[in-house]
Length: 99
Image (cartoon, rainbow, N blue to C red; front, side):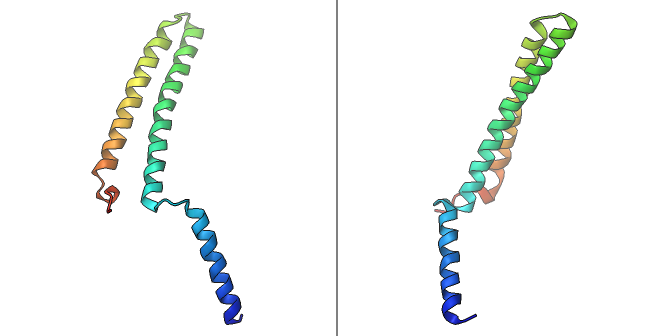
């Protein structure tokens, strides 16, 4: 490979990397991913508990009480999990901004 073709390849790689980064740092990307994970866990806890409550109501004939109780418990569990995950993220010194 000639020096000219290596330089061209290096330029193409640099251009592809800059297009991939979207203007955010790796730390910001990790923070964004953690935020999405917290939200998905919260909504997931509520949906799963609501579905389980619906199943219990359907087969035990207790409608709508099991679903109501499990929705409240799912909300509480989702909130607790989100708070715990946020506290862990805040406690990690690697997440501090270095502006």
